[in-house]
Each structure stands twice: as C-alpha cells, then as structure tokens.
Image (cartoon, rainbow, N blue to C red; front, side, top):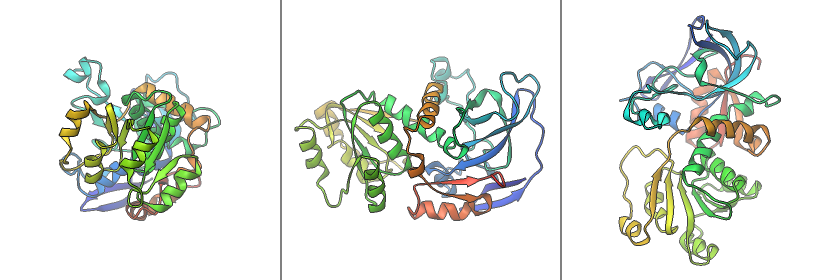
Length: 340
C-alpha cells in the first residue's frame, strides 16, 4: 500500500508499506479520502517538529470503510462506512478527571502524535470510530471532522438564535463556523481578504467583507445598531486579526480563538477590560460535536460541493499542499484508495 509521510524540512515522502492485521480492540480501515488542513500545513512548515516524530504518516480528516475487525470488537461489520474522532486520551490526568477528556493533558492526537490516515489501510482503536450515515458519499464524509471542529467552536461561543456573529477568516474552518452558526440561528458576517473566497462565501448566502475596502469596525457598529458583535471567531491566524478582534465585540461579548498561532500575539487588553469581554480558546471537539457533524453533512446543511475544490491521488499530496499554501483551493481531498 502507498503512504504519505512528513519526513522533516517541508518534505513529504511517498512510500510503500505492508498492511498488518488489526490488534485486539482495533479495526483496519480501507481509507477512501483524507482532507488536508491548516494543522497539516503547520506540520509541513516544521512548526510542530518538537511534537511530531518523523517519519510521520499524517492526516486526520478522513473517511473509509471497515476492512477487518480485531478480536473483541463488537457493533461493527466489515464494509461499514466510517470516519474517526482522532483523539486518544489517558483518562488519568487532571483534565480527564474533570471531564475534559478531549483536551487531555497527555492527549495523543492521532495523525499528529501517532500515525494517521494517509495510508491505504489504517489500524485504529474501534473506540474512535464514528459511523457515517447511510447514503452519505465518502468524499463528503471526509469533511465530518472539520465540521465537528466548527460545531465545537460555535458551542464554545454559546451562539444563540438571533446573535450577530463575526467570523474573521473565510477559509474552510471559517466557512464551516459561519455555516454552523447560521444553522444555529445566528446572523453571520465573514471577514476575508481573498476575493475568490468572498465570492464563494457570498454564493451560499453569507455576507463577506473585504477589510481593505471596508472599515470593518464601522460596518459592524452599523450592522449591530452600535452594540458590536455578540460573538467574534478569530480563524485567520493573523496577528492583525487578533489585535482588531476586540474592537468588533459588544459589551460582555465573546471572542473565540480558533486559529493556531505558532507565536505569541498582541491583544488589546484595555478593550477587554473596558467592555468586560470574554476570550475563549476552542480546540478539537467532543463526541456530541461529531454526532451533530455527521447529521449536518448527511442532511446537506454543509455546502460540501463548495468546500471541496478538488480531489488528488496520494502521489500528488505535496502538490496539493502547494495549492493550499497559495490559497488556490478551499479544501483538497487526497484520494487514498485507488479506483475510488
């Protein structure tokens, strides 16, 4: 079987390996599609070299079908369509004991801390499987994981029906957050620099602002009758966005930090003090977020056709990252299973 591994220094190596039988409690997945995301880009850039062990078969947004069952696995059958919730927690750290297993202090994020999905046959614990709804195409099912991220982010922000929500950054996660927030009843505006992405965002009925052409603070003030946004999601990862986010939120509004910031950022704490703002982090997801994500994908709430720019074979994984880097794509899927 073919594999794609990060081997350091922005290098991806396409290799071969022999499939192995699943161990007790595991299943072997015949991987169909793997989505590439911003976290994968951080890995490729070396920003996570202190964490990952190379060579690393990476990838955690995926879909496939069960190929084999290890001993002791019940409730699943060969051929079942699945995705995975790629979190493996220890259950013993203070975070886990407090009920926050998804952000375990010793979390094994599968696909980052251990081998991921960019391989045709992938052995995983049965406990992390998530069933894909009947009739959901496997390419669309590969978006369940990032949709679960968005669901978790929106829940962290405690978005309510009628809220005015600003999303800074109109990439895949930004669009998903905006879509989920709208589904939850909010009015949503997305701030995005890239013109093509703004066109795509507007095509699904969302407002998209160009911050270079529009005074975003004045626009939000007008939109909210002088109040400011109820919730602001920082998804761009840009220093200027972090600094400016506090100017968009209402008194006692909420700012949710979603993007991965590899270096510390400036923030306007005077504004945080003056308006009694809340600043929250939002990382990964919980099982309920995945269950909601499966439903949103299967019922067509998520604009999967808009998000999936193209699908490439495993051998073109490096070129796909070049397209993501240059913002030539919204979401690229790697077709892992030959002939899928």
